[in-house]
Image (cartoon, rainbow, N blue to C red; front, top):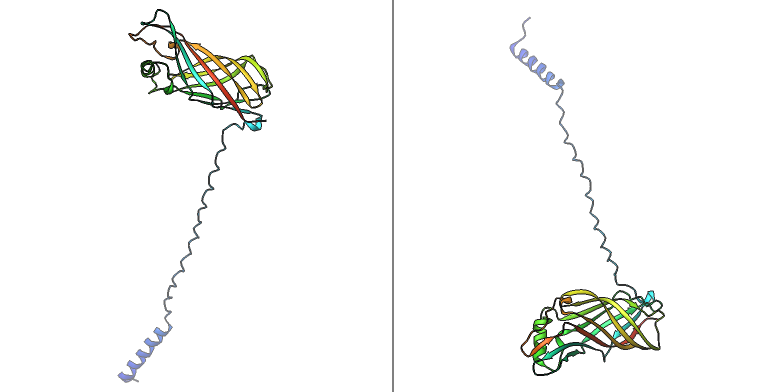
Length: 243
């Protein structure tokens, strides 16, 4: 029996729709959630540097006595010369009161402690002749280059501790002297009077011009200059600290 054409078309349409209904649908991909980035660690600033300790010696904690140059101190040079206008030699003498410094001692042993130094301003040396002063400062000492003389004491010789508070004594002080840019060991002969407030006295030493790289003065008015410089220091040291 033949089916009408319309019925056949309807049957085919129904079969196609059913097949489509049974076909599995492709799954829709779900986008993956992004993995959160790990938190960034905040860098910890480094601690501030610890200031270095001072290297200054603690003199009082080690029993040090502090003596300081006081008013009344005077430095002096003496050089024997023969002037053309005189028939006999005489001493050229130059002085200055521009002296400063500190002496630090162990009062029990008289060992000299670090920080002890004496300074003389050579630019202020004056004699009885201004032309001599100008020549010495310009040519011999060259004070425009080397304005100061410095002495750093290292050892007391011939005097034992404890530090006297009365009486007189003769002894030596050895150390390093710097003049005209040259440093050399030198020893002073000392005569001193002690008291509870400090010490006063005179120190003396001598050396040749060439020892410190200086030349002997040569001028027309001076026939000769002895190659021997004598230094004298009238000192007043006041006690400023210590036991």
